[in-house]
Length: 338
Ligand SMILES: NC(=O)c1ccc[n+]([C@@H]2O[C@H](COP(=O)([O-])OP(=O)(O)OC[C@H]3O[C@@H](n4cnc5c(N)ncnc54)[C@H](OP(=O)(O)O)[C@@H]3O)[C@@H](O)[C@H]2O)c1
Image (cartoon, rainbow, N blue to C red):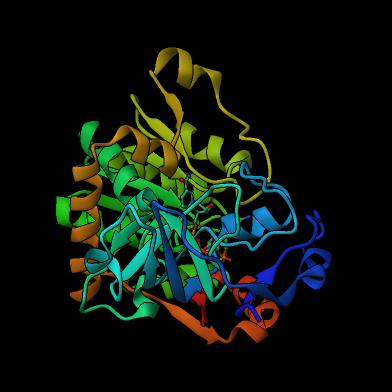
């Protein structure tokens, strides 16, 4: 009889997240064999990200054939490789994986990866530390590279309680770039008071735009990173000093970027651009990505960032895990430990 393994399966997308989650199930699948240039990975840990939530709702730019196992990243140990790969280089090694292909993702005990979807993990890091060590830290790396190219003395970032933002602060600190964080909740702002932002603003406060405008001008904030969209994106752009750039990299509000003062575009040289990790990786030299990942691994080991894991759940409790994560996203990531 063929061997099976447990995986979380999505049978249908649903814009109603509760319905999407209730339709999902922990299922038994036939254990795959790696193709000639593939790796079979025994997964250890994965984390929930906003892109996973949008994916379950059918609202992400990646749409897969269904049913499928969700999950764009995670970590595990290579159990077997195909005939084109040297087993001694891989078998028994811990790797991090990142995939957006139309195939089963990482939320299962096994994941079949292409060579370009894995990186060797540092020996001194635990699975919980590695589960989310690829997408968000490298996104922060790419965003901070934009600020460096623009020689910005200071950056602003909304959804400041996010994992991406905590990496942005850590990387900016290394580069001597000041940071302004914007949150939507006063509680999140209070939680962040000790995390190293040079300025913090909550959109829940009256006159927050005035306060942000003062800080942005005082600190020379000419680059802003937007994960929210809607009118907040326009408000950030409008309140920064001239030659400002708003880099849109997320759409947490689900609303179109709006409220941009055309005078900023015409007379103050304001710019709006987008950032997507996949494109950044495709446009970077492989050595640059590897070097970035090595630095990130050293920073995780050196506790240069606040990892904020709020809960670790078993695969059986994945729905509870997603609910815990969505109940308080700034409290930290929820990890599934296989
Ligand atoms: N473009 C790319 O390549 C790329 C790659 C990676 C990540 N991202 C994006 O980066 C963003 C952050 O991801 P993450 O994993 O770091 O997040 P996370 O750690 O899960 O945290 C999410 C944060 O977003 C805040 N938030 C949620 N909905 C919001 C809304 N409508 N308005 C304002 N704030 C809101 C939450 O704050 P409170 O609930 O405390 O208010 C929380 O701090 C996401 O938009 C994600 O899609 C983009």
